[in-house]
Image (cartoon, rainbow, N blue to C red):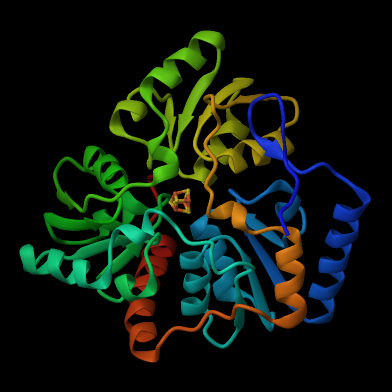
Length: 328
Ligand code: SF4
């Protein structure tokens, strides 16, 4: 079933609030309580899906929630690699993904074979993989990172030369922050952030000259050059909250703009035009959340051999994230 959406003033799209939407939301919350399920939603999710979540966050926050929950079921409203990460961190829980088509254009850009070939090309260097990879690629990594902790993770390694996959732009941003290291990047990128071009940013900035430009590090270096602040989705949320500025141009996925507007209704948030939407994130709709919870559809399963190795990479990241003061 395809949810109706309509554009609002800044190009983001929201589903009209109807009695049917409210009935579905109430049904899902009741069902979650009865089945002892926790609902985790990524910030890029549709607004009406964010509204039914127990926790809303970026990859790192949701990983932390997944690792410590005592719920019997984790319904992961996000994309496949995120649900896999939840399963890796809490393998005894039943982890459900509302739509198995919710993949990731960036995660598709590197396979386990390619990760092994990358390591073989540069022997002796550790491989850091962004969490935006599938479990079999994480299994090849020495450690994982998120956009929140990428520089902290690389800094925690003793090696001067480090392999970084799959996002060349996040790797490039880490390189800029850690000039004493050599970051050798894979050639992946996020198709959703790739559409953000410097000309679009300048055009929008000309319309709103007072707005601070806040960008996600998955944007290209030419776009990041134009930003007043570069940070993860959670970093952008926190920056916008503590800033004395009242207008912001947000260079990332549309869901974050909806979240920022909900959190800070007295501030103004603009997007470039057209507003970037991650098609994978938008596969998750209320009807699918309800069906997956009712029938326990789409359980995430990971072969044991991959599970053990991939989990080690994630746990190393979590240990760094909690033991080292993040500077990024
Ligand atoms: S926004 Fe980009 S990196 Fe994130 S899930 Fe979508 S395609 Fe993947």
